[in-house]
Image 1 (cartoon, rainbow, N blue to C red):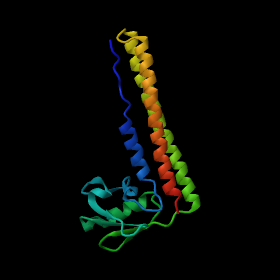
Image 2: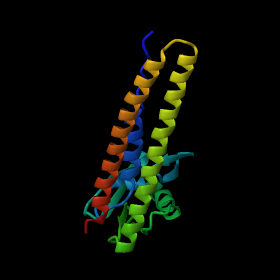
Image 3: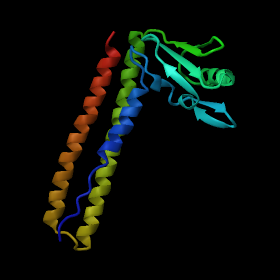
Image 4: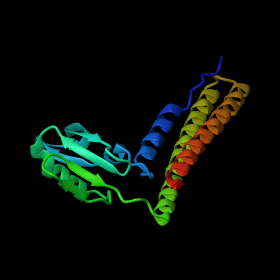
Amino acid sequence: MSIKYNILPASVILDKLSHKLSTVRTSRVNSSVLDHITVRAYDSQMKIVEVATVTIPEPGQLMISPFDKSLLNEIEKGINNSNLGVTPNNDGAGIRLVFPPLTEETRKLKVKELSKYEEESKIEVRTNRQKLVQEQKHLKEAKEITEDDLKDFEVSLQKEVDELNKEIENLISIKETEIMKV
């Protein structure tokens, strides 16, 4: 019997990490910092991007223009209730968010946050590796694969894990450089 190779969900793990990294603020503001904020609209909780257009008029600013102007107060309330660290300026037509420049201390805290994301991703990789190895061991116990097949699988899987960990470290390194850039 030939071994059944399972592939680590690398793209899923990297996509999750990329999304988390996009919410971490750098010197240039990105609209994804609003992704976690929900507002009360039309009798349900909705994300800001579902009820408004978000633009970046200047590197340190976001402009939120709701499709329905009656939602301005709800959007403002949602931003105030979040831990975004900015005060929304409601001009009646939209909401302007002016982000202060990052201090050296804030930059270092954000780099620590990146370390947490890196570790979470690597834990997910290890968990998936352990699960896949267990599946193959069960196949060996059921005599569906040989000991050599299992060893080949483990070697192949470890190479894949090492490559994925390098990609994770690379993404973190790139983001860290963006954060520390003044």
